Length: 206
Image (cartoon, rainbow, N blue to C red; front, side, top):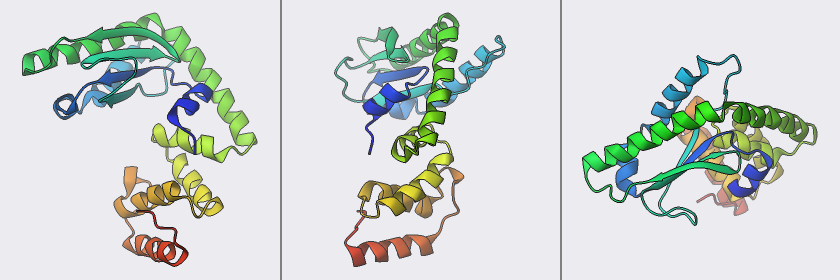
Protein backbone atom coordinates (compact mmCIF):
# COMPACT_ATOMS: atom_id res chain seq x y z
CA UNK A 1 0.00 0.00 0.00
CA UNK A 2 1.11 3.53 -0.79
CA UNK A 3 0.32 6.46 1.47
CA UNK A 4 -1.08 9.66 -0.02
CA UNK A 5 2.02 11.57 1.08
CA UNK A 6 4.30 9.11 -0.72
CA UNK A 7 2.04 9.12 -3.76
CA UNK A 8 2.16 12.91 -4.00
CA UNK A 9 5.97 12.81 -4.05
CA UNK A 10 5.81 10.55 -7.11
CA UNK A 11 2.74 12.03 -8.83
CA UNK A 12 2.05 15.47 -7.35
CA UNK A 13 -1.36 17.00 -7.87
CA UNK A 14 -1.01 19.84 -10.41
CA UNK A 15 -3.32 21.89 -8.18
CA UNK A 16 -4.99 20.98 -4.91
CA UNK A 17 -6.77 22.70 -2.05
CA UNK A 18 -6.63 21.59 1.57
CA UNK A 19 -9.38 23.05 3.75
CA UNK A 20 -9.19 22.69 7.51
CA UNK A 21 -12.77 22.96 8.74
CA UNK A 22 -15.27 21.14 10.89
CA UNK A 23 -18.36 19.21 9.79
CA UNK A 24 -20.48 22.31 9.27
CA UNK A 25 -18.33 23.32 6.30
CA UNK A 26 -18.56 19.87 4.76
CA UNK A 27 -22.32 19.71 5.09
CA UNK A 28 -23.05 23.29 4.01
CA UNK A 29 -20.65 23.30 1.07
CA UNK A 30 -20.40 19.70 -0.07
CA UNK A 31 -20.76 20.89 -3.68
CA UNK A 32 -17.43 22.73 -3.60
CA UNK A 33 -15.95 20.17 -6.01
CA UNK A 34 -18.60 21.03 -8.60
CA UNK A 35 -17.95 24.76 -8.15
CA UNK A 36 -14.22 24.22 -8.63
CA UNK A 37 -14.84 22.18 -11.78
CA UNK A 38 -17.03 24.97 -13.19
CA UNK A 39 -14.22 27.41 -12.42
CA UNK A 40 -11.68 25.19 -14.19
CA UNK A 41 -13.90 24.81 -17.27
CA UNK A 42 -14.22 28.59 -17.57
CA UNK A 43 -10.46 29.01 -17.07
CA UNK A 44 -9.60 26.46 -19.79
CA UNK A 45 -11.67 28.35 -22.36
CA UNK A 46 -9.00 31.08 -22.31
CA UNK A 47 -6.03 28.78 -23.07
CA UNK A 48 -4.93 26.47 -25.86
CA UNK A 49 -3.21 24.18 -23.36
CA UNK A 50 -5.87 22.72 -21.07
CA UNK A 51 -5.62 21.68 -17.45
CA UNK A 52 -6.99 18.17 -17.81
CA UNK A 53 -6.97 17.01 -14.19
CA UNK A 54 -9.61 18.16 -11.76
CA UNK A 55 -8.77 20.52 -8.95
CA UNK A 56 -8.41 18.20 -5.98
CA UNK A 57 -9.94 19.43 -2.75
CA UNK A 58 -9.52 17.82 0.65
CA UNK A 59 -11.56 18.84 3.68
CA UNK A 60 -9.81 17.84 6.90
CA UNK A 61 -10.55 18.45 10.55
CA UNK A 62 -6.90 18.40 11.59
CA UNK A 63 -3.76 19.45 9.73
CA UNK A 64 -0.19 20.09 10.93
CA UNK A 65 0.19 23.24 8.83
CA UNK A 66 -3.33 24.69 8.99
CA UNK A 67 -5.51 25.94 11.81
CA UNK A 68 -9.29 25.66 11.87
CA UNK A 69 -11.13 27.65 9.18
CA UNK A 70 -7.98 27.99 7.10
CA UNK A 71 -7.20 26.76 3.61
CA UNK A 72 -4.10 26.40 1.45
CA UNK A 73 -3.73 26.01 -2.31
CA UNK A 74 -0.82 23.99 -3.67
CA UNK A 75 0.69 23.78 -7.14
CA UNK A 76 2.60 20.54 -6.98
CA UNK A 77 4.30 20.53 -3.57
CA UNK A 78 4.49 24.32 -3.33
CA UNK A 79 1.98 26.24 -1.25
CA UNK A 80 1.08 29.25 -3.40
CA UNK A 81 -1.89 30.74 -1.58
CA UNK A 82 -3.76 30.50 1.68
CA UNK A 83 -6.54 32.22 3.57
CA UNK A 84 -8.35 32.12 6.89
CA UNK A 85 -11.61 33.10 8.49
CA UNK A 86 -11.57 33.91 12.22
CA UNK A 87 -15.06 32.52 12.57
CA UNK A 88 -17.41 30.38 10.46
CA UNK A 89 -20.18 30.03 13.02
CA UNK A 90 -22.83 31.83 10.96
CA UNK A 91 -24.15 31.27 7.47
CA UNK A 92 -22.86 34.68 6.36
CA UNK A 93 -19.30 34.09 7.62
CA UNK A 94 -19.27 30.57 6.20
CA UNK A 95 -20.32 31.87 2.78
CA UNK A 96 -17.59 34.53 2.93
CA UNK A 97 -14.97 31.85 3.65
CA UNK A 98 -16.35 29.73 0.81
CA UNK A 99 -16.18 32.63 -1.68
CA UNK A 100 -12.62 33.37 -0.58
CA UNK A 101 -11.54 29.85 -1.55
CA UNK A 102 -13.14 30.15 -4.98
CA UNK A 103 -11.63 33.60 -5.56
CA UNK A 104 -8.14 32.49 -4.53
CA UNK A 105 -8.36 29.40 -6.73
CA UNK A 106 -9.28 31.52 -9.74
CA UNK A 107 -6.24 33.71 -9.11
CA UNK A 108 -3.92 30.73 -8.73
CA UNK A 109 -5.16 29.22 -11.99
CA UNK A 110 -4.38 32.43 -13.87
CA UNK A 111 -0.95 33.01 -12.32
CA UNK A 112 0.26 29.42 -12.23
CA UNK A 113 -1.29 28.01 -15.41
CA UNK A 114 2.02 27.18 -17.12
CA UNK A 115 3.45 25.48 -14.00
CA UNK A 116 0.27 23.42 -13.58
CA UNK A 117 0.54 22.28 -17.20
CA UNK A 118 4.23 21.40 -16.66
CA UNK A 119 3.39 19.20 -13.67
CA UNK A 120 0.54 17.61 -15.61
CA UNK A 121 2.89 16.68 -18.48
CA UNK A 122 5.57 15.38 -16.10
CA UNK A 123 2.94 13.15 -14.47
CA UNK A 124 2.05 11.64 -17.84
CA UNK A 125 5.67 10.61 -18.37
CA UNK A 126 5.89 9.22 -14.83
CA UNK A 127 2.74 7.17 -15.39
CA UNK A 128 4.22 5.66 -18.55
CA UNK A 129 7.31 4.58 -16.62
CA UNK A 130 5.24 3.14 -13.77
CA UNK A 131 3.16 1.14 -16.24
CA UNK A 132 6.29 -0.20 -17.95
CA UNK A 133 7.66 -1.26 -14.55
CA UNK A 134 4.28 -2.73 -13.53
CA UNK A 135 4.14 -0.67 -10.34
CA UNK A 136 0.53 -1.69 -9.75
CA UNK A 137 0.20 -0.41 -6.18
CA UNK A 138 1.31 3.12 -7.06
CA UNK A 139 -0.81 3.14 -10.20
CA UNK A 140 -3.87 1.94 -8.31
CA UNK A 141 -3.61 4.57 -5.59
CA UNK A 142 -3.19 7.29 -8.22
CA UNK A 143 -6.18 6.25 -10.31
CA UNK A 144 -8.31 5.57 -7.23
CA UNK A 145 -7.81 9.04 -5.78
CA UNK A 146 -8.60 10.74 -9.10
CA UNK A 147 -11.62 8.45 -9.61
CA UNK A 148 -10.41 6.95 -12.88
CA UNK A 149 -11.99 3.64 -13.88
CA UNK A 150 -8.52 2.20 -14.52
CA UNK A 151 -8.38 1.80 -10.73
CA UNK A 152 -10.99 -0.99 -10.91
CA UNK A 153 -8.90 -3.26 -13.15
CA UNK A 154 -5.83 -2.58 -11.03
CA UNK A 155 -7.76 -3.32 -7.84
CA UNK A 156 -8.88 -6.71 -9.15
CA UNK A 157 -5.29 -7.48 -10.13
CA UNK A 158 -3.95 -6.46 -6.70
CA UNK A 159 -6.65 -8.48 -4.93
CA UNK A 160 -5.43 -11.54 -6.83
CA UNK A 161 -1.77 -10.80 -6.14
CA UNK A 162 -2.39 -10.10 -2.44
CA UNK A 163 -5.51 -12.12 -1.52
CA UNK A 164 -4.98 -11.52 2.20
CA UNK A 165 -4.83 -7.74 1.93
CA UNK A 166 -7.90 -6.40 3.75
CA UNK A 167 -7.62 -2.94 2.19
CA UNK A 168 -7.92 -4.18 -1.39
CA UNK A 169 -10.64 -6.71 -0.53
CA UNK A 170 -12.68 -4.06 1.31
CA UNK A 171 -12.52 -1.63 -1.62
CA UNK A 172 -13.41 -4.32 -4.16
CA UNK A 173 -16.34 -5.42 -2.00
CA UNK A 174 -17.48 -1.80 -1.85
CA UNK A 175 -17.57 -1.58 -5.65
CA UNK A 176 -19.54 -4.81 -6.00
CA UNK A 177 -21.90 -3.78 -3.20
CA UNK A 178 -22.66 -0.22 -4.37
CA UNK A 179 -21.74 -0.02 -8.05
CA UNK A 180 -19.21 2.63 -6.98
CA UNK A 181 -18.71 5.40 -9.59
CA UNK A 182 -20.56 3.21 -12.10
CA UNK A 183 -17.50 0.97 -12.32
CA UNK A 184 -19.51 -2.25 -11.94
CA UNK A 185 -23.16 -3.19 -11.63
CA UNK A 186 -24.23 -3.97 -8.10
CA UNK A 187 -23.68 -7.67 -7.51
CA UNK A 188 -24.89 -9.19 -4.21
CA UNK A 189 -23.73 -12.59 -5.49
CA UNK A 190 -20.14 -11.41 -5.82
CA UNK A 191 -20.29 -9.76 -2.40
CA UNK A 192 -21.56 -12.98 -0.86
CA UNK A 193 -18.88 -14.97 -2.67
CA UNK A 194 -16.17 -12.63 -1.34
CA UNK A 195 -17.56 -12.85 2.18
CA UNK A 196 -17.64 -16.66 2.08
CA UNK A 197 -14.12 -16.83 0.67
CA UNK A 198 -12.94 -14.42 3.34
CA UNK A 199 -14.45 -16.49 6.13
CA UNK A 200 -13.03 -19.72 4.78
CA UNK A 201 -9.51 -18.31 4.45
CA UNK A 202 -9.66 -15.91 7.38
CA UNK A 203 -9.37 -12.98 4.97
CA UNK A 204 -12.13 -10.99 6.59
CA UNK A 205 -12.56 -7.56 4.99
CA UNK A 206 -14.49 -6.03 7.88
